Length: 304
Length: 254
Image (cartoon, each protein chain N blue to C red):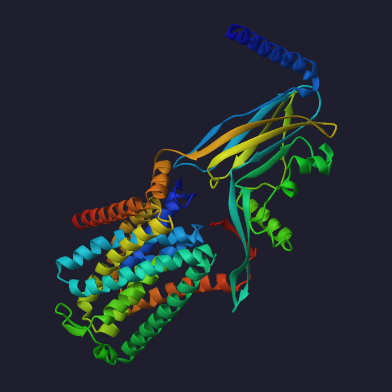
């Protein structure tokens, strides 16, 4: 059963899209992160033009983050003040990202940029997660106690300090705004929410308590991906609403199963699995960049 | 005065019409060519997976039939990757200002047997005779390579067909052929040129048009996205947020 995607201007099997949505939703439910940074490469693998994959995936992430955000908000796990500072940076970052995206698209370097960004960040995050989970598993085998240590030295020396009651922090607003800005740029160029960068940054750089990290990052992600969607629609015309909604339908169902399976597995095993998956996607993109392509030439509509 | 002038004008029209009829009757043996497409409008809807158009016609007497189906012209850029810091990145590029969005040729026998290269070139029949203008005409040195790359890449996605499609005769006068339009056909106005070539000389030609456009929900959505991008973006966000919220509600209760 094929469906014609009006913005991507291609015909795709709707069951394939639902299946991809379900698979990525399953992982999202299982690990709590990983919607966009797996879905965007998958869409590119099946032939969706990379700019459309990025724009539509931002739209889908906005939808996917709503219910999670509401659940965390009900439990009081959202630091709205911190979220707003992150969002302020994110809004500026997404504008920079979308403009950069348009420039790169015009000079024919956007596909390569998206791939390089994915290889870099998937590589770093995947390797860190693999090492961390392997260490935890080894330590558990040896029976040693796991220690959690917060590190935030240089953040305390920056000016413009603000009090974030919910996070029990008195730190400079520059740090969260800077993190938000960086994640906003990534969201616009890679079609990701950026949770995989933001969550570790909130814990290890800002020193936020883990209880409010997920809810607060979802707050930032929902608004930033919404902004990115509108900006991509305006500057690049690359948001396919039909594609986003089909993926969402699959993801919603997949996420329910994922979260059920997730409760039955241990955290470090989950992170180890996710790390392997992330590294596999990273490897595939890396190979596509370094192996000589079958055809060195490609054709695209010209911008004049 | 005005009455006379009207009458003489009417006279003239009548004479011209008569001459045309007589002229046609005299030249009818070789000149007679009629062709049409099975569809003049193809609508792209949500279930669109490509289409097949049938071209049929009739000709009087002998002669070969060649048909060229051409999509709307659009500027296309051809880029070449080269190894940069170990990565294969786009480096050189060339812009063709009015490459047809679709190109296919059909004939009843090999083109080389039908006409001399000169005539095929004049009529722009065949891959090698496709007129492709360069945006920046300075770079002529590598034109051939980029041109071939354009033809090859458009062929790969089914938009250009290098192979000549077969025109079949039904009896001695009726002919028919089909063109495959893939799901990714560009929208716009297509032209089918039908040539009747006898003993290597062009005897007659006809042109018929084909309109391909998005229709229904797809058309509405894509023109909305194109002409009101800000509103489209906002609607996309609101729809997504409501859908996401609804989905969350459904599964919380369930």
